[in-house]
Amino acid sequence: MRWSLLFSVLVLAACNSGTDTPRGTVFRYNESKGITSLDPAFARSMGNIWAVNQLFNGLVQLDDSLAVRPCIAKSWEVSDDGSVYTFHLRNDVRFHDHEAFFHGKGRSVTAHDVLFSFNRVLDPATLSPGRWVFASVAEGGLEAPDDSTFTITLKEPYPPFLGILSMPYCAVVPREVVERMGRDFGRAPIGTGPFAFKAWYEGVKLVLHRNPNYFEVDPDGTALPHVDAIGISFINDPQSIFLEFMKGNLDMLSGLEDGSYKDALLTPNGTLRPELSERMNLIAMPFLNTEYLGFLLDDTAACMKGSPLLDRRVRQAINMGFDRRAMLRHLRSDIGTVGDHGFVPPASQGFSQHPTKGYSYDPKRAAELLAEAGFPKGEGMPEITLHTTSQYADLCEYMQDQLGRIGVRLTVEVHPGPTLAALVANGQVPFFRKSWMADHADAENYLSLFLAKNHTPNGPNYTRFYSSEYDALYVQAMRTVDDSARFALYRSMDSLVTTESPTVVLYYDRVLRFVNPKVTGLGANAMNVLSLKRVRKPFLEN
Image (cartoon, rainbow, N blue to C red; front, side):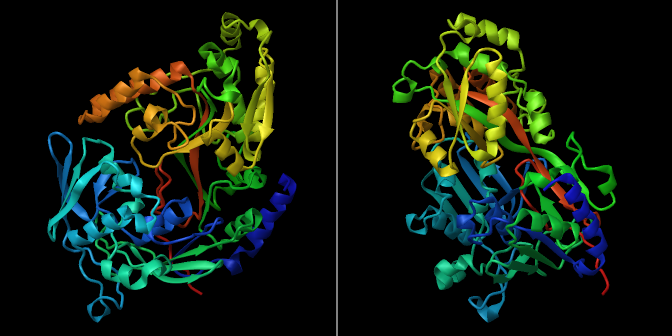
């Protein structure tokens, strides 16, 4: 949709907003891709995660700075060697009411509920995609010695583990309700969260109501949550979503799913248009998502026979041969951060003050590297095919033009998403576009992509990068309990990968939330977690 037409939509929405504004303290947002389950054992997609986060709690949680904070566990200790975690539970956490409980009233949570919940995710019969979060737990390492104490023993120290426990997979569920409902638990779940399940109208709306017995409070002692309900709609047309937000029928518009209304909301440098400042607020912050191109470094793969990409100098030349800043400005309206650091986003803990030095636009040095590799001005270099999806074709075509200026002939081949994923996993394409959105907040989640043990198709090492030095640094980091010392090892690993250039970092993404200006208390963090328990919205009289 062109800007002129979008401007008309804005005006129309403004004229209609008076009669269509929602009434009451209901926070409304849309989930265009739908929700497949409200069972935390299946909280894999962002839509599922956001909804589950309102309904359930885990032992710990992340704050907006990604620091681990207490939740159901009021405190914990970690053994000196980092292998045993002992959690002490609150005694005021209750499950939502359900007929499976005595007199239908939600009972108190105990450590035995934590044990059941974790073992349920681990049980192969559950088919949970979150089984991997407990891969580091020793056999028999989950124990509930009494109602208020829970212990976890790891096979070996794994410092990111505490943060991983904040993931929705680790939410606490009640045994009696799960066993009564079976697979239907994901359709009408019972948790401990600030909101409780009320109704799910398939393909239309999901309704959650305020939990009057919620255990957390604001710093001033005010009970949480503040709004009476959450309404999640499932509109899948981007233009309809946009119009509903502009009419006031949605309190939040997350991201820019359809670029056609980007110019209606943002200036060319990615800020909110001044004329909209009274109609909405923009919450923007770094997102732990690295958009990149990957090189296959497996010299035994058929597609890599005689490939110039096996030469590190060629990979470095490609890294220096295009202007990331101009690419982000012209093709992304500066939505994101220029990828001139390492693979780990600079917003990650341990990297914000000491980001890895990456690659900047330097066509002169790129030309020198090509000449050193035996391809002066690209002469004698075979054509390289870059494999991508239609969503990122413009970025790849931009690189095609830029790299052509230093003599690198690039062909862009577009595939459907599942096709490209299969080709990459099976090592069938030499140069490909990928992204990595963090599963958990620790930088280890990014660095594990380059471990030998994680080679595809069974792991996320899509480039099949191998370095014994890198693997040794990883082992050392996992044995280091002190955060600052571990972060220093992480930075050494990121620097090593940057030098070897198995990837081309394009940019680091950003969280964008356009919000009703009357809504307060809606934060954001670099994991793009949605927490609505502190949101306030004024009651509007009919």
